[in-house]
Image (cartoon, each protein chain N blue to C red):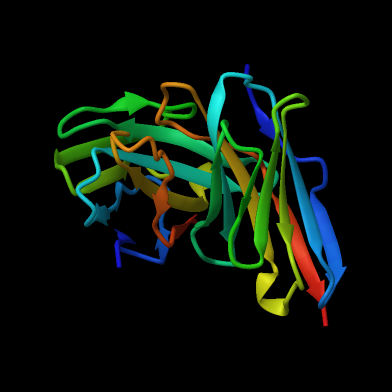
Length: 112
Length: 115
């Protein structure tokens, strides 16, 4: 079946460096993508989203890039801070669907 | 601030007990979902609901049931709790999609331990 996956299950970065978290998706019909952040013991929180008619979207310290040609999604976090330590999930929904498919997550650890 | 509220953060129940997990959202969302989250397995959909009194099975419905008597409330029921149902349970909601925004809002989660 269709699935959303991640290239790296864990990522350690030095405080102040930029972080890049990657996600591969397999449903070429997906038209909406989201990144969630989940801190330990909490529910996932929305970070940023992007529609398939865009290839880049920026938020506060975060940028999402979408490459539909290779079905790849990435989350870039600028000047990573200790508070960014969490598990990050990508999610997609297929065209016409309001149900999301989630990746398994990447754990980001920030080294002070 | 919009919210999805799960009634308990932590629960400990005995094997064989009937367990109710409650979820309430204040965003007037049509869709509500129950997931369980386990290490290495990610988020797995148990049940979802498109509307009051409507429910659909997700990927892992066995051992669970749900109830949606009011639009804002979606309950997950473990008919007879077993130790393999020890997990983090997450409730989420999203609107029907009129604005083409299908992002979920999640609750804080309920960590259930069955002993």
